Image 1 (cartoon, one colour):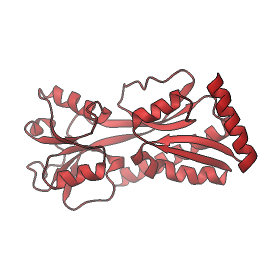
Image 2: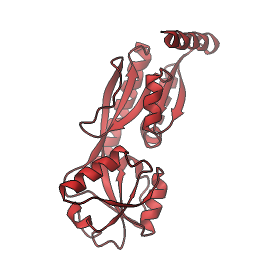
Image 3: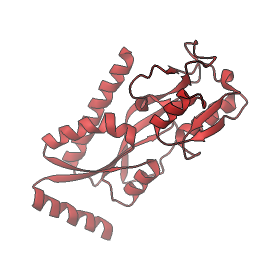
Image 4: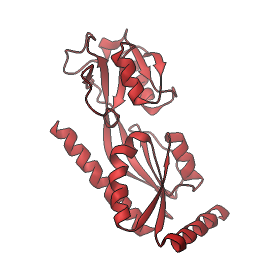
Length: 234
């Protein structure tokens, strides 16, 4: 209760100083670039000031639980629970496919879709945290084929991941949202099956101002739809 009063005091002070409502929003890097940035522009037009926190998923979840964030872009694997309290509501935005990234000379580079069984003896570049949701779903999928993926390098920077793959260190499972511009030294393919994806959502405190919350949700849904349409077209 004291923490909520403190947050309310900060909001009133911000309103008095700026004449605007402030939303404290958290995001992970790949979502911040393509999903959140256009939404911020729309909110600014509506007179809403944005205070932004960028970090990995555990930091964002802690910020929501501590009431330091009003909202956060989060991700999970289908069926995963984010372990948030009842006063946090979660709105799904889009399914972000996990795609296989390979060097050009990989034996599977000529395939349209790559069976995981063909990657049994392949080295992988994974996330810095072995419990990362994408790594966990990869371990599950490989387990269905009777083997464990061998990780030779780990990093949370997807640009570094792609650089390591291009250099021949291994292959990687990368969310489509994180791929960035096409690289001619890489081959990107979907897996044959199962189709793997992470679910991207926006989590909001129920105490968030209704008007600002609805504007945020509408802006994010609009941008998510544009991204999904663009993916379908390519």
